Length: 165
Image (tube, rainbow, N blue to C red):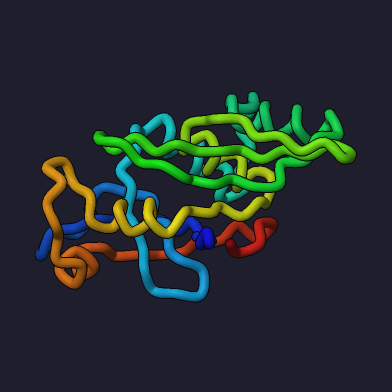
């Protein structure tokens, strides 16, 4: 059964540092398990804009796609991260519905995260992928989760017009 995650943001800091790199954190809804994702700055800014409900002067690609989906009468009903490959490369299935027709489109996970935030759709992971993400690093080595968690200063900031995930 897939698990739902909520998006948070965190600063990964070493002991004694004032500020660290901003990363996106996916935390299990109703649980304590979480995964930190380091993203390219352009992608991180797109996802943060969706998270905080901030529109730019001109819509970014994810905001434009979300507007297209809204205006077309198509409904995004699911974002499911269902496979992981070395890298890590995450495979995402976007589930769409219009009338009685339901179909799935393959997408990059970061596109799925941004669209889910723009369209207020839950982000789901398969149990296997979420657990693999919790233990994945560049060398595929196991990490001590308590030590990793101590280095993450997690914060959740909400925009007044955006419901909490």
